[in-house]
Image (cartoon, rainbow, N blue to C red; front, side, top):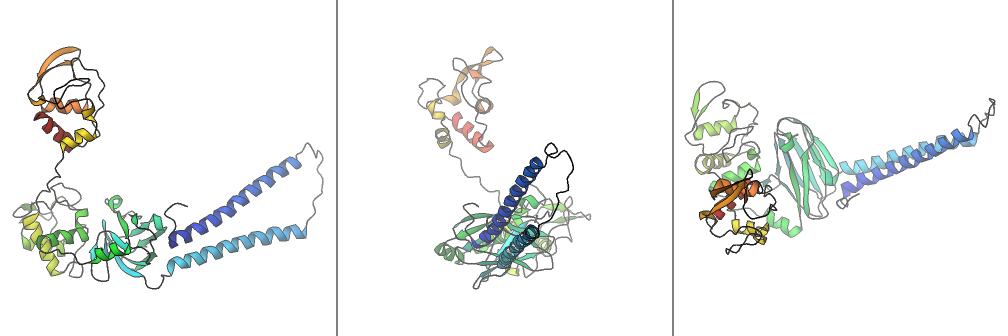
Length: 402
Ligand code: CUA
């Protein structure tokens, strides 16, 4: 069906689909053609008087009874054998435990390693045991044509085998609350050497361990680390802060509170949030990991430093330099040289006006370039509104220093 479909489970599903669809198409066309032909052949104009030519043909009736029965039985047989193939996990499969919760996935390997993406080696069958800690979710990997509900209190499973390295989508296919649409991750199929390298124990001690645990367990799916509030309180700079509790009263955030908030999250919910966080017991997060997370939250969560934007590269990569020179020469557009200290005459509402170039003007000149044109230049610059806010800011700062 498509380039990804050469893996065993996809092939099993696709073959049956094509088989059933093919027969359906042939029958649809056949029946339509015969119907039209009969309508024409027995049109009233050719047979003005009702006749009684009706007789029957044992041969014909036998054929049109047996043939469809056989076809439907082959569809069943073909579908059944392929379906059982989807349920019988091949020998030597790697077993991975997938835990679904509102609203993230965690994958746990036999050696205890955990990850938020499903890393698998190419060419080896993978058995995924599906567990839910709260409500119904559904593990759906379209490239492998596999989908199975994760049911609280029940263990379900699915298997697949990646035949080519690559990244394949995983969705939650069962509506499970406000975060449902974000409950996505991926199967990362690695070749043998890359997978072996990935399996090597990672050196994560101290604070790095705390962050790693939170990523593995999907905490950051609901709790931001940068101060933005979403469906759960942000974890940015918590130490010593006070919070109102939904039950009334106030707490000061310290190690004891954070530990309780992880082990028994719904006992003391921060005001304004719903009690919906699953509890993390010793089996999910052992005491050492709990301590690492708490240490990380109390001391180390700082606003992530935004990657530095290279404004000069932005100007070059977006073709600005094609019209605006850096060296003071002017052709079809004003030069960037000396921009930060320049007075320019602009046309605003059909009137000339002299202004000093500042951040506000540059921002407008980037986003809405033809609104206030510098006198003497044609209105030909496209808007740079496809750049992010941060990129625009970086450009404005850079240009002011020219
Ligand atoms: Cu989980 Cu939808």
